[in-house]
Image (cartoon, rainbow, N blue to C red; front, side, top):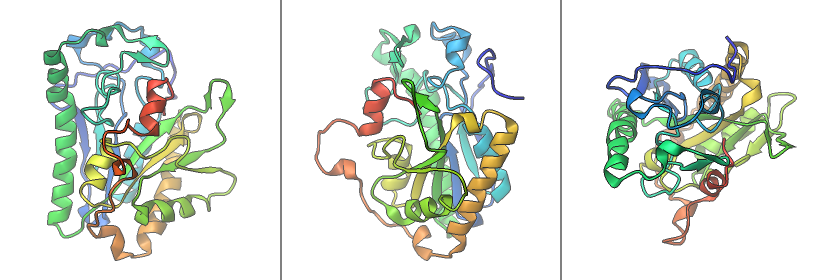
Length: 292
């Protein structure tokens, strides 16, 4: 069924604010999807928003979960997907990032996020944010223990236009300072005929404290974030097509057999150059309503 703006996914999160897809650590890959769902647990209602608002890009990355799930199945790789809306708390932000819990998103006031007490914020961190990151850390530990530190691939999606300007990219690769995986991935994606590939577009991959900073940069694992344009992956057919495109690109990159992809190397981050500076470009874009 094609995703539409008049439907609202409702799911009982229970005790697990993440979905784990089992896979073979020997693939050398770990697939993530930070903004997989627009689900909000019952105690939080709808955060004061209308159902149609929760089906916009401000609440989750449309189509990304379908691509990530199919990609994991195609490659036989483990995957971790979030099971809560980014509006509740954004797992792709550092805990000190002002966009961790958005009060205004793309010009829309999120009433349920206004005036939160420190205790309420800590509750969201403890119930949703930390368990998601903990299971990612455990998946990484398991792969390392098996003798093959994983390449971490995060799947996101971005809107096809922003403020009336069409975005030309079909897919983008976001990365920071570690080129081991991002550069060959860019090259492999550029072999797909008839598409434009963005290098750190439509966003920058330099965001201190985000998921890949936390699990890739600080742990010395090769990593990259893949952004697919949303209009290409709204339908199951589009999701399957792009999962296949990404699988072929990843097979090519991983099949080159470079041991450097599975070495633990601390390349650092471009966001570490000056202490105390504001978060990277992606966070700035989010604060001004510029979402992926």
